[in-house]
Image (cartoon, rainbow, N blue to C red; front, side):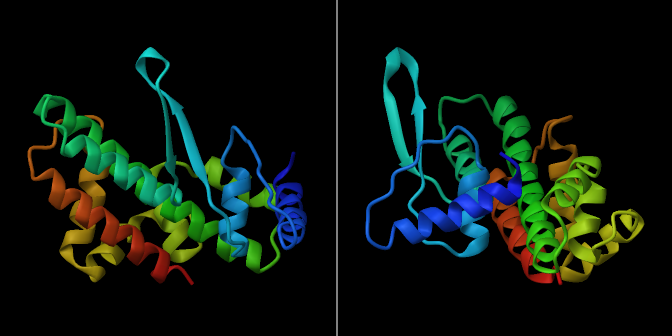
Length: 196
């Protein structure tokens, strides 16, 4: 189903939910994304099968919050070696920043009438951190050279967090993981607010 039809489905389900309880099982995130973008109230649950077929059901926030929750859980896991956490947590933080950027780009471009397919193609073609942040902040993927200076205008912490997240999957981060997660959350919020 193409993105425009997913939005249409979300609207139909919202209309139906005014007089009925609606339960939808889906394996992808497009319907929850559409409900968030359209402001449709919905409870989204994630079902995960763990070891020995134990089923875990938990409320799912938006992707940014989900990545940050996972990063926090890993950072607080005592029996996880520090060397593993210092590589994995920055990756979750990078995913949170990317999710915030993609959300900002989708909201802006769809609100002004761009086609869903065009927006998704643009995001796919600019999936690397610098072009993606440039799209979110400037609505222009070619302004990659301005990304760090714009982030540092928010505060040095923003540029530092971005660079740690960008490099984190490739090298161990020896700083405080809880501080990185807090900075990432703040950066994701700032990117969302800064996007026109």
